[in-house]
Image 1 (cartoon, rainbow over the protein chains, first blue to last red):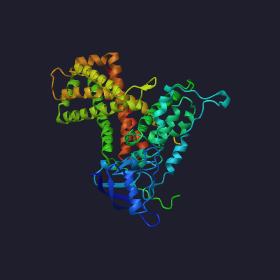
Image 2: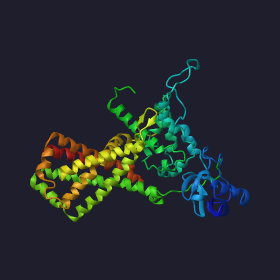
Image 3: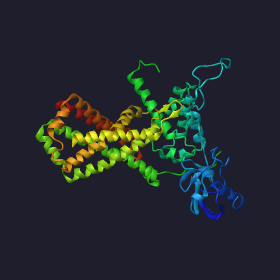
Image 4: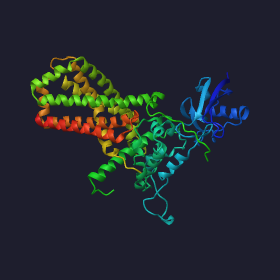
Length: 247
Length: 128
Length: 113
């Protein structure tokens, strides 16, 4: 059987007319190889042009199509219909305010991303004439895993601490800070510590690990955050118990 | 630009019932209640030890009550769950890089289980 | 950004978590056996007293109890928070004081042996 009738239960919300979200049901004839995104596109093209949602690459690299599929944070382009029963519930990504239908307000995440200074801050100023920054393959491997983040925010949707404490900087942002801290070309760790070693930074994390479980790119932000905790703790003890040691 | 964003409230009292992974997390966290209580039991044992043989023997006698048997049984389950959950996440918190490769997580975890077995054997042989 | 008090306690928490992971299950098994009277020679005063009287024994006992206390206290602080009791500073004061009490008691008893 190459086609299945799927009941899509989609959470709708029109800010102009609704006081709260409500579910709307669509019957979608799905091909076996389809993903939830294909089903949504079918709805938009054939059943209801008013349905709003974000998507772009349809191949799990752009990070646009994050949403809750049967209560689990997923990229809709990576949620295969064949893995679900005939009833699929689709909701906007958890822990973010709903803008409209499946579109969430992402400003908080964008601001947090910017706050961790996610760019190389070289140890010393180096003119172009001095040549490029050199790095061994081993030095690259130290941080490479954390470069794979596509900013899809599934980790924020999974994190119960972010759900309850919106000030929490969050998994992806802190993992990205860790990516730069671990980069041998970078010297900006002290600048980032102010943000990620704060109360709203890594110390709000209790290593639930849900973020790493849902990450579609296997970045393991939970691991990054624990490594930041270790480094920050060692820093604290060095600073307070051995102040004569220069950083 | 948001006209009227809708915020979905999450309860801080029952959020962990919403998903099996959160239940597993809470189960892991509450092991600390048993670890903490058991540690005070050890301190009480130490206290009776410091007071002489009679006090210590009375303490061991007291351990035989149904309450303490049940407590130790529950603490055993909690302690084992703590150990397994702790070992399983160690590679994430402390990755070991050797050149361009990382030591596989299974090896790090396996080494912990091996040490756990050896240490447990030493304690059991000494205690029993 | 507010500086957290957690880094201070996270070190002992992590060390304590590691120590308890390795030794606590076996220790509980020993006390469980003693409680169930599995072995008549279990928990003899003489052998345990001899261990605790030795300086190395004292060090080991102190290390295990100290780290177990501070591990449990810090994790309990976070757990209360997860259960919805958001008076974090109060919880920290109460729990770390308890751990402090346990630490002092241990020192006191060990020095008497």
